[in-house]
Image (cartoon, rainbow, N blue to C red):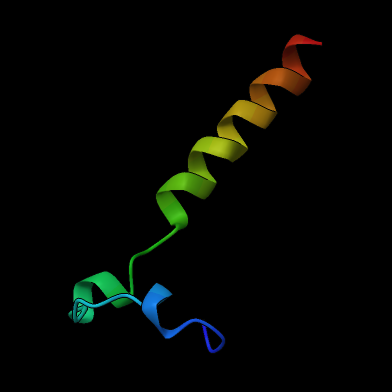
Length: 40
């Protein structure tokens, strides 16, 4: 983005958007991985 300033986001993000938790996605991936291991 430093080479092309037009690619920068134009909106301002608030606190909720900046600190979006990733743990729900990690829990889903862990459950799917566990199910795959138990099924195989």
